[in-house]
Length: 257
Image 1 (cartoon, rainbow, N blue to C red):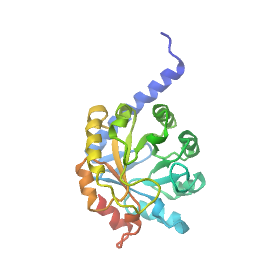
Image 2 (cartoon, one colour; image 1 turned 90 degrees about the horizontal axis):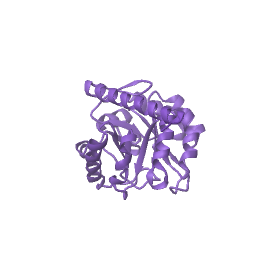
Image 3 (tube, rainbow, N blue to C red; image 1 turned 120 degrees about the horizontal axis):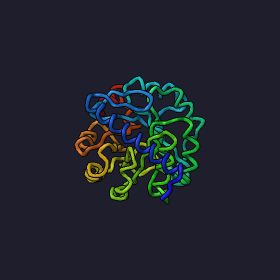
Image 4 (tube, rainbow, N blue to C red; image 1 turned 180 degrees about the vertical axis):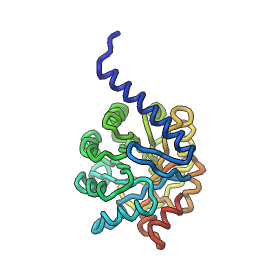
């Protein structure tokens, strides 16, 4: 059977990706976590402050503050007012965030028409782009598209969505983001059932793709982060907790690690 050039390119990209993920795993065990542009110190928990809770009147300053304060990723929530009842930011603002940030971007799409938004944000070269499985008819195709753009693909699960929904996609993913609040607004209360959900997802990941990360977003603080770590979570997103911490962002980030 003859195979198209596109077939060989796709498989070559996948092979290179698996080699890089293996290197990441080995480096992580040695005490470092690497991305395609820089290396990050590997703590027990990686922290991705959400700029949704930043002061947009001094956005660049707030982005620099979390980067200097020890964060590992800068989480960017993109909402279109349709998939969720809120409207946030577009590529012009995210470009400003990228210029201010010294840590990689972690873009979370809460939108309809995911492919369109991937095209909008891909030129900014984030580390991750996450999309909601609830909104995507062809998730595997979109994962391949994100990967082909040199970005690490991630899928998001709303609180009601079973972890088994992504079982047969895990081998192609770099991360799964579990929502521990209903998406759309910051400052919500943590939904405790995400602990069991993370445990179930971790078991699937160990079976299918041990290099895939688990990220949790919503209501994370210095108390429930311990339970999340025990459940196998690798990355936590925190907005209100970080930006409104009485001792400042550096202390807040440290308390989540």
